Amino acid sequence: MVRPFFSHGFLHPARGGPGVPSALDSPPASAPTAVPTDTAVFASVLPRAPSPTLAASETEMPTLAATWPYNRPARYYIYQCVSCLPSAPPMTIQRMTFCITAVDVRGDLTMQFNVTWTAELEECKNYVLQPDLDNHRLYLEDDLENAYRHTGSGGCAAERKVFVPPTDDCTGWFLFPPAKSSARAFRFIDSNNWVSVENIVLGPREPA
Image 1: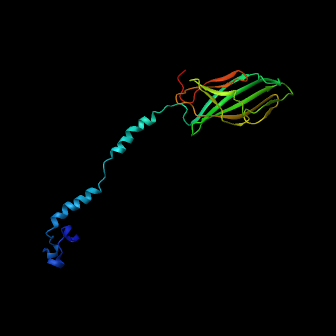
Image 2: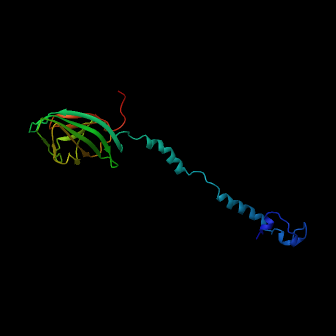
Image 3: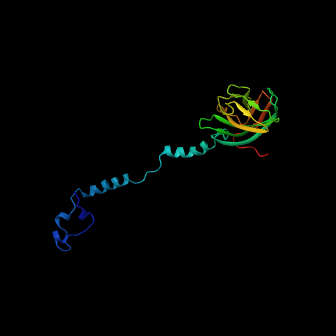
């Protein structure tokens, strides 16, 4: 076994006198074979080059970033409205304005359409908005002509709302299934009142 005081080239007077190495300082005959052994151990702890698997994953990152840019999880501000006279009695309302304020695409890609109703009423006459829990005459259609029925609702989309004059409003939401893979735009259709909110884009818009 090579002793540490020899491996650094020190001479120890206590063993061999001043400037004279002792017999213990002499390397054993097998010392030359220790050099490649030590070198091999040292080389094993040097940093290793990236493996082919890591290199492949790095080259795939731009491909993952270039995914379909529409209907991804985010909040999309819309602020599009239509106005009408409701077709259902009682006819105490002068105008009803329906707006889509924003769309939240959730992590599971379902689409929550946040909406408002604003009623302008005749003096001293209320108007009752019935819930739309099972009203599938309110639905979505995409630019590929796929139809989507809402699977959930909340706020005054799911509750009876009494509007009081002269002007009253309420908010609610409708939940729809995930968009089809190639859909780029939607329209929200109210076939009860023959109106629709057009060109709802959940992604980048083309320049006007």
